Length: 531
Image 1 (cartoon, rainbow, N blue to C red):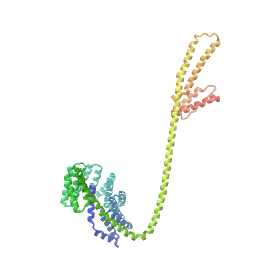
Image 2 (spheres, rainbow, N blue to C red):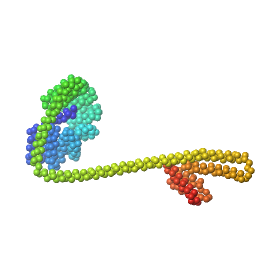
Image 3 (cartoon, one colour):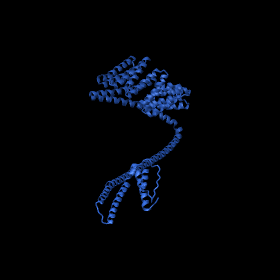
Image 4 (cartoon, rainbow, N blue to C red):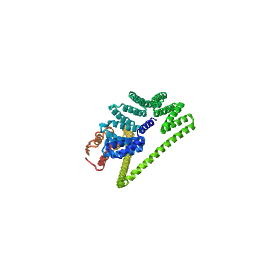
């Protein structure tokens, strides 16, 4: 509601500042041979006459004035016009276009310290845009820039305005304490300056926060004080707004009788002033009140009145504006048709060529992206395959090693122990036996010797299958220990290792150890190697 009120106030101010006669006079200056200074001033005033009153006309007249300012390299005039065009686009809902124009205006004015008074309002306009799009941090940044300029210029009215505007941002941030603080500071500045109307707007803003916080009594108190100020000023328009705000507050409070009374008073004043937009909003609120009271017939009637007002407002304004714009466009088109025909054809050719190039580039980029995407997918798939293969190989190696260790343990703890026991039993009964023949003694000794050799063989096989040296030491030390057991007079094994002092992955060490074992045993067994 507060945003609507601010817009209506600006419309009232602008529309009351310029009449149709004034606009005709300004156009006469533009169509004359007067000096550039007079023409550009007339052009800017003409744009201002439409500002917030007729957005399309603001943009059309602004574009014409921009051509005149650029032709005469008048950067300050360009910045002023960009600001007006930006604001018109903002109220038309084209926020991206509005931001572009306002930022370009700021970029020009920031380079000229002599026109800081013109820069501050542009910061304020851009801040309102960011506030509208809920980019609250950027909104506060631009409000801060505007405030710094107003403070450097000792512009109390400007400072008070920024405090009021930025207070709304803190409402959106749900920081109601800071919002009220800013509205209050703005009000104190307005009181010192004797600006009672600005005081009333601060009171209205504070009341709006109180409504949000459901402090309805405080809201009503502030709005009644605001209304008294406006009654003293005999400002019917602002009184209508105050009644409307009171109606909204009482509706939220649940005091429906007061809400209806205030909204009805607001509508009476709005009807006298012929402001159907305010009437429309009031009827919308009255419809909501009636719904809460359970009077759906009355709610429907209010809703229909609101719809009729909005439709008539839209149709009357838009029909008149469309007719005027069509007339302007037809006249301009007929005057420029012959001169611009060749230029249009050339621009069309350039445009088609540019579109063709963009399409080709777009296809190339799309193909390149697709190829990169495929390569990336293939790379990821290959990596996953390799990973799975590595995991499988690891699992197989671990299974094999576990099985070797199990068999080695069974040989060592089972068969080995049984062979040792057999040898001990044979040795024990040797003294009890009487050999009648030396050959019997030799056969008995040979049997014990075979059992002993079998024990050693079982122990050797067990150690080969489960190398304790590898479990205790690094791979290098395990290899040295292995070959030391093999070296004898008939065969010498020489070993040189490098980089094996630290422990490696257990699977890698096991595989390498097995490979070296197999190589050495094959050389001994099949080649009868001596070195």
